Length: 374
Figure (cartoon, rainbow, N blue to C red):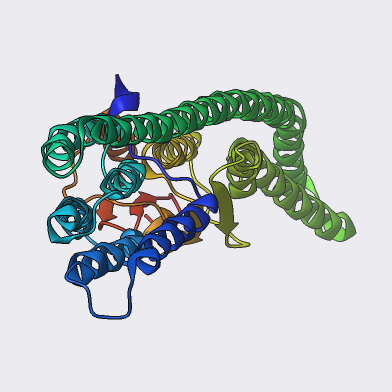
């Protein structure tokens, strides 16, 4: 199940919970401090330092975050052997509460279970059977409670994500239907102009050409001017028909903004230049689908807070960048979604590039040629 492979985050609440953990760590140390330098001072400081280091985990590599958790567990298990017994179960349960923010939920459960025999070895050596059972019970109860909270948070996040994906699909479908209706109306108007007005202007131009050859004297000049006006009018009609058949860049931007408005998280910002190059229906549809897939990937996998879609013009045609501030990846593997983006781009003669770094988000750079550029 994919849910077991996910890491989680409590968002704005997480710093508060970490502050509570620091307060608990400080309390248990101060409560045992007698004025002289105790033998347990160094393991206690190692635990606190590792706890503080976990507060900036988003900026650190995964190996350092895992090392900080291992250091906390080792320090908590070492405390009873240096005269600081009684709080090892509490401190280990605080470690369990941090693991889901670094490792997957499956690994977090494994971590909590793996600490149990180590705690057993420590408490049965230092405490009586009843005290040891009390410590083990408290550790197990708090660990299960913490993992259940994370499980519920993962379930809620998955539900929000699925709702956002469904909403995005509905908005995409609506945008495509609206755009299809607009395109159909534009095609109807262009056909009417071409078949009726264009036909009559062509016939008028032919008749005026014949009249110009037959006209003599004062009538020749007005006939020539009338023929020139007919030619210009016919050229204007052809330009209008061509422009009406073309997909205007503003329609693409409006469709993308409609999708962005329907996704509550992450926040999606669509930025576009005022004068975008005109592209074919096929090219704009490919760009639309590529942006949709890239945004969907950010919603599903990146744990991003913000996604930016930037559309600009260049000498080659249209440039599209989709980037997020998610967790990024160290090794880029092309799944079905990214392969689909590549295929759609190649079908319209475009190119696509993917870049990502851990903690620096993910970026898709799409270049699509347009008729004006080529």
